[in-house]
Amino acid sequence: MAGKKAETTRAAWLEVLQKHQRDPDAPGSENYWSPALDCASRDELISIQNEKLAVLTPFLYENSGFYKRRFDKLGFAPTDIQTVDDLPKWPVVDKTEMMADVQANPPFGTYTTHDDALWADRGWMMFSSSGSTGVPRPFRYSHIDREFWSWANARAIHSFGIRRGDSMFICAGYGPHVFAWGVQYALAKMNIACIPGGGMTSDMRAMIVERFKPTVITSTPSYALHLGRVMEEKGIDPAKSSVTTLLVGGEPAAGIGNTRQRLEDLWGARLVEFYGCTEVAPHCGGYSCPQSDQGPGPVTSHLMEDIQIWELVDADSKERVPEGQRGLTVCTSLNSESSAQLRFLVGDYATYTTQPCECGRTHVRAVGAFSGRADDLINIRGIKMYPVQLEEAVRAVPGIGDEYEIVLSRDKDGMDIMTARVEHIDASVADQVMNEIRSHCEIRADVEVLVPDTLPKTEFKARRIRDERGE
Image 1 (spheres, rainbow, N blue to C red):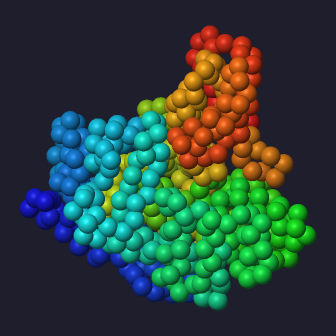
Image 2: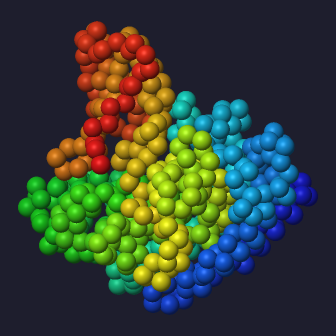
Image 3: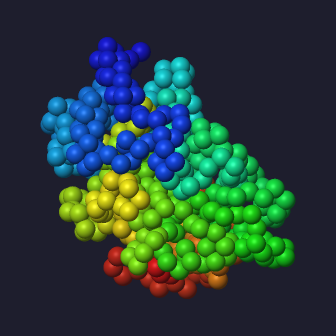
C-alpha cells in the first residue's frame, strides 16, 4: 500500500490537473474546444506549466521508484525543479533507461506512477513499446488518464474541423498501441460516430468506405496510401469517395510535401496530423490547425503547452537548443495520473517557433512539422525501434552469418518497406528471421537470404541500417 506522502502528493497532483482542465465535456466555441487555453498568452501558459511542475516533482519522487532513484543519484530534491527555467538541470530521460528499469523490475518497471494497487482500483488500459531486448515497456493507465486523454484529443480533433455529422473509419489494429484508441475515445466525448476497422483486410476496408461512406479515415500515412491503391484496383476512385479528411499519425506526413500531396491527390481530401508517443501520456501532443498548410511557408504543427512542456535538445550534447534551431523533441507530461514523465526524450527532429499562429492559437509550433528522426531511431509505418532490437532478432536464428543489413525503402506508392538481408546456407530460414523481427519489433519485414560471404565485411564501425527512403 502506498505511503502517506505518496497519497498526499498524488491527491495534490490530481487537484492541479483538474483545476486546469477547461471545457472538459464540450467545446467552448466553434473554433476552439478550450478557447481560454488554446488562446492563452505566453505568460499564462508558462504560469500553468510552473504551477504543475511544482506539484509534479514531489509526486514523481514519492510514487515512482525510477524517479526517486534518479533524483537521489543526481543529488536533487524535488524542490530543485519547480519551474520551466529549472528543467535544464534535469538530464533528459531516454528509452534505454526505461528498458533497463523494466528488466530490473519486471514486468511493469517503476518508471510510471501506476502501481498494482492503482491497477486493481481504477486500471483502464495497458499500452506498450518494445525494448531493445524484446521485452516490452508497458505503460498502465487509469480511468482518470482516459478522461484527460479523451479531452486532449478532442481539442485536437475539434481543431481539424471535424464535427457532429461526420463519421470516422479507424483503419488500425486495436493492439497495445495508442493512436487508434485515443481517437476512438475522443470521438465518444465529441458525440461523433465511428466505424472501428480492426481485424479487417484491406479489401474489406475498401468496401467499408464504398458502402458506409465515412467522411474521415484515420490511419498511418503509409496505410492511407495503400488503402487508396487497393480501392483503385477494385475499380473505386478514392478521390470520388465520401472521404474529405485523412487523419494520420504514427509516422511523418504533413511535413513531407511530396507525401502529403500524393495522399491528398489520391483521396481528393485534406490531410491533418497527430503527433505524440506512448510514454508521455498517450494523447495527442502535436496537431494540425486550419492554417497549418496555408500560405507560402512550411506547414506547422501546434503543441499543447498547457498539458505538456515541449523542448528541443542537441542530438549529441542533449542540451536545450534555442528557438529556431533544429533539435530532438523532449516532453514533460503535465496531463497524466500514471505516466507524468519528466523530460522524456521523444527523439524526433523539429524546429520550434512561439510566434502566434493565424488560427489564433498561441502555443509553440513545430515549423515543417516532424519530418525527421534521430539517426539511431528507426520509424517505419508508425513503429519505432532501435537497431539493437533488429540485431537481436536476426542473431536469434541459428546459423545466421556475422554480416547482415536492414534496408529501409519505399515502394512506388510511398509505402515504407523493411527488408532484412541475411546470410545463411539454407534459404528456408527466411520465415524464422521474419518471425523473430516481428516478435522483437512488432513489425513485419521482408527477408532476403543470401549465400554466405555475400555481404561486405565490417572493418570499422558497422553500418547495418541502409535507409533509401530519402526525404
